[in-house]
Image 1 (cartoon, rainbow, N blue to C red):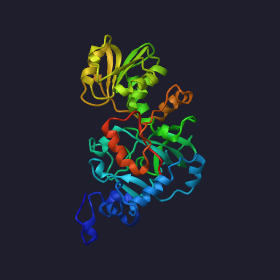
Image 2: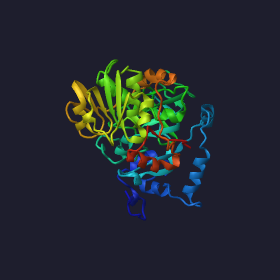
Image 3: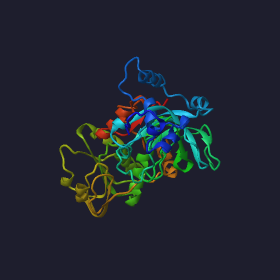
Image 4: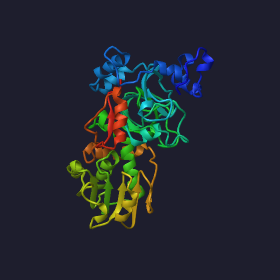
Length: 388
């Protein structure tokens, strides 16, 4: 991607020339040209362009009312600020760009002014090229989870309208052709069927952290035929998905017993979510537990151990790592209907969104946020807010 700077336009063209023109259409910039305009931060000095943009981002750190957001974007611009990568790799491939084209809205889509976005492990895996065979073309604006305000609706949209506060996972299939224009931008276009109205009692930051994680938690429980009276063990109960599996199993599905693992400092947190048994994985082996469980939900990658504590005929959900029978893996399907179904539990407070206390990370610190997600130390979700 770091092509040698040449003296003629023909020599500047990259394999992604036509695709980069979609992201940066004015003057049909190549990726190499666009990266000359790109500002990466951190680091930045007080006098650098990156510092000036950073200050502008932080100056808007107070979340504005939805009405103010809607008014501000009554006239949608042609360009927007976004984080972009034009090649696969680690966090060093992420670039900030201030002139990415606002995505076009298809008939079944709405355009959202992004107020907050959240990161997931799948964002990092996608950026690393772990499923590039089924990915959308580069360059990519990353991001699955979004919360924001509808500013434009397509001709086939039936329910949503301009000014609606919504949230959702913008990619119906996480690994199969996720959108080229993700949520780490000022605007993103999303199919109406993937969205739900934001619960009135939670803010945009909390809402942004929910969609992919709560859909994964719910779909996994559904696939195990989990129901009232059953027991469950959740591995990595303090993580983004695990913290919601605990709550859904206990407060939505009616589990008879919920056990979960975490490090020493997070045991009380597990109990606050509804865990009946909080297990310190640094001191106890799950294989030594006196009972087995109807379902083991492995959200950390220890399926080989999980299968040893499941009852005969029980189920083991394995979200990551190698799968040991009878464990199984699934790829979540984004569905606004699931969010709508769970909204009453969120509005009643029975299920609570969990945002990592280190956040939210400002838009200028997306690189740090990605690194934090990859550390696997987050409690709940890592959220980006405010978006310029």
